[in-house]
Each structure stands twice: as C-alpha cells, then as structure tokens.
Image 1 (spheres, helix red, strand yellow):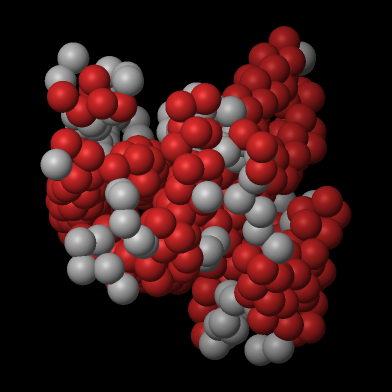
Image 2 (cartoon, helix red, strand yellow):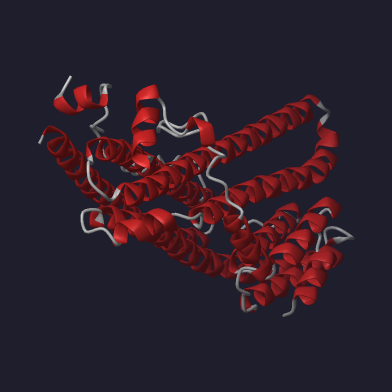
Length: 118
Length: 326
C-alpha cells in the first residue's frame, strides 16, 4: 500500500475528524514507518473492539479467549524479560566505561601533580 | 581535604561515584482486573521509562567525565613547563564541548520528560473530569456521552503518544551532537585512550538500548497481532449469528462496517514500512552543524563555561589559562 492508500483507509475509517487529521498529518510527516503502522493498527483495532462492544458481542469470557490472551501476555512478558536483561547489561557497561574513563583522568591528574612538584 | 582537593582548591573535585545504572523498573504488580491488553501496555510503558532513564544516565556519565577532564587539563596546564600547551588547550576545548553536550542532553531530557508528565497529568485530569460529569448525568444520556467522549479521549492519547515520540526524536538528534573534537584528540593521545573508548561507548550504548527497545516492540506487536487476529475472527462468527437474530434494525450496517475494518488492519500489517524520513535526518545533520556549545544550561551539575569571557570559574583558573596561552 502507498501512503495515499493508507490515508484513504484513515479517511474511510470511523475515527473522529480530529483523529483523522492527526493521523493524516503524521503519515505525511513521518511516512509509513513501522512505529506509525503499529500505532495506526492499534487505533483501528480499538475502533473494531469498541464497535463489537457496542453490538454487545463479548467473547472475553470464553476459555479460548482467555487462553489466547494468556499466550499473548506470556510472549510479551518473555520479550520484556529479555529487554530488561539487555538494559541491565547496557547500564553495567556504561558504569564500567565511566569508571575506566575517570581512572584515566585521575592518572592525568597524578602526572600533572607530579610534574608540578618535580 | 585530600591532596587533589588542596591542589584544586575545592573539595569533591574527585568524583566519588560512577554513573548510576538505571535500575530495572520494580516488577509491575498485576491487578486482578487488569486485562491482557492493559498488562502489555503497562510493560511497554515501563520499558520506555527504563530506556529514558538510561539516556539520562548517559548524560550524567558524560557530565562527570567531562567535568573531571576539565579539572585535569587545568592542572596539567598549571603544571606543564615545557611544550604541549596549545595541544592541551585544544583538548580542553573538547572536554568543555563534551561537558556542554552532556548538559544539553540532560536539560533536554528533563524538559521533554516534564512535558510527557504534564501531558499525562492533563490527560488523566481531563478524562477524570469528563467521567465524573458523565456519572452525574441521567443514565439515558450515557450512551451519547460515551460516543462523544471516547473519541476525544483517543485524540488525547494520540497527542500524548506524539509527545513521547518527540522525546525519542529529540534525544536521537542530541546523540548526534559533536563529540568529535574530544574524540579525535583522545584517540590521538595514548593516555586518553580510555576516554575515547568511553565516548565510543556513549554512542554505542544508547543505540544498543534503542535496538533492544525495538526488538521488544516487534515481539509485543507480533503477539498482539496474533491475539487481535483471533479476536476479530472469533467475533465475526458471532456477528453472523447476531445478524440472524436481527435484534436491531441498524445491526447489519454496523456489522458490515466492522467487517470492512478487519481487512483494513490486515492490509496495514502487510505494508512494507519506509525508513525514517530523509528530511528529518537532514534536519538533524543541519542541527549538528549549527550546534553551539555556549548554549549550556544552568541546571548542569558540571563546571560548564558560560561564554568566551567566562571560560573558567575562578580568577586562578583564568590566570592559569592566560599563562598557558602566553
């Protein structure tokens, strides 16, 4: 799909006029980036969910729905656990890099002091 | 006061702590009423906060090293009797640029963070007010209120999301700001090699954090896509039954619209994304070229010079530099 086709999808949607304008501006400004497409899909899905809800069609109390939802949460939790581990490692590397850099600067200070005394 | 403190004329010139690692968010408490979607949203928001904290940690680390480096060079200039003064001055300018950059990063992150908080508070407040109004109305008006206000709420959420994205964009641009002066000098100087490594890390680690965040979002989107697909398919089966019942005159039209919306989501999922727009990266490049170190911020913890005639904090410093430049 091209940008114009996605814009048409937005225009044809049930989003409010203000919402449509915001999305069309974003599409024109940012292009069809992954982040934008993900956000737009989420908004459309909210519209769909809300539409079904208004129709009184609720499947959330079925065992199948609960199993599917639990599977989704489990997948995201696993990804979040992986992310947290990576961020902890990155923070630790930052800490080490700073400690090394400060030590190097300390050495410069020591040399400077020695030079001034000698 | 230690030897360095005496020599530098101030306590605490030797940084006692290294960068504080952004602590992992406390495990989110899952409420019994929380839906799967809400749980996913909470986790992603927590990830976003963790990433922002890391960026703040990078700015703080750079401020500490930049400040300490500046002190070291002032000492070096004071102690050096022979040669190398011009080179040391040049390196010091790099250190100053690094410290200023750190200050800018911290200031910008703080400002944008405050915007996000403000937007979030405004959103909560508006929604709470609207909700409160709604419950004071008669029940027969509730449906109308929901139709009018849910959409308004979504628009506010969209604005909130845009603010959050702007924060990412601004920080990404700031990360490109020139540390090159210091990096070049540090790489040419054996003693300063760890400082060069540090600067390289400052550029690599936020990029690694971004990559980890993107990976998380991709996984989360994939999981949500599967779940949404299931929901849409399962509910469409129900709508067929509902149409047969024909309880409401407008039901077939509503179902038709919903049926049309589901493929639209599928179509969006199939779009091949574009790279971030060239115009925004060009703008970032242009910003880098025009970046001015003297735009330092008063909130900085570092010893940031404020202008050409205020390069150093004390008269003693000024004397040292005058001697060095003579």
